Image (cartoon, rainbow, N blue to C red; front, side, top):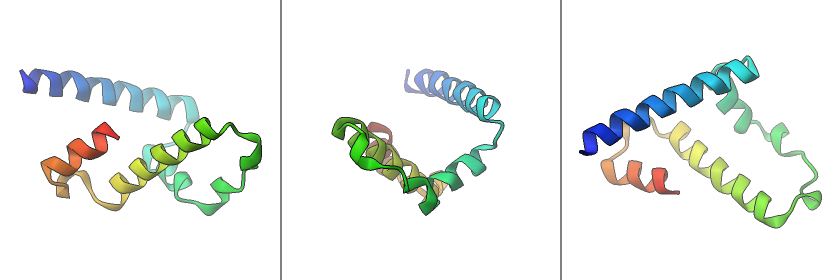
Length: 85
């Protein structure tokens, strides 16, 4: 049963990744590099609601975690933790 869930989730991941790349015209590598560029964070944070800003940084840390450590090098527990964050 877990394998079936994995296949469905992987299919959803690929579909979403393709849609993101198509919409932005950029590869996933280009998109993730933008997230690690300090220029990305020169936005006026005072104008954003605290909930939105908190969610943005939570997602950023999750993406950075995956980018820093390759998925195939992560332990099963690390993958579950990042997936749940």
